[in-house]
Image 1 (cartoon, rainbow, N blue to C red):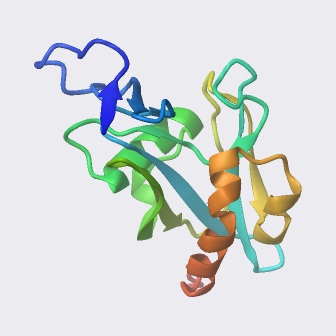
Image 2 (image 1 turned 60 degrees about the horizontal axis):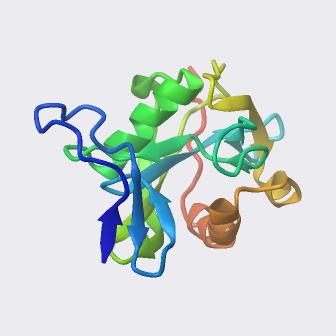
Length: 176
């Protein structure tokens, strides 16, 4: 069973009602009152292999200094896909219209709390605009991701995510 660690927001404040920690009976804390979601965005690299957009987390943030995915708390009215795309827009300036969602994977679950990784493609490596939660945003070849100091949750799910992405052909730019 999870307990909300902070007071509930006003009921009429639906937008943003997901921010906050929940605490399991074991004392483990998880960000997102309604779970959380992140975007694993793939694009072709110069050699045609997949690159993914990673976020170097700001030093002040939870697990700051590690690399992970743009993402965050789900609001009560959002699907994991909606939350991940919204967070990627907020944290990386990505236009939702450019993204093609391919699939979702629940990569963490604890007492009803879930973290869902949304896998999406774009046909080229888009320019990004980091917000204050990011020290840096970078396109990284899939084969080089594990070499970085990864956020523990992302590190724990990376092998599984690679298996899923290997089964989904990367969308590439259409030639005219």
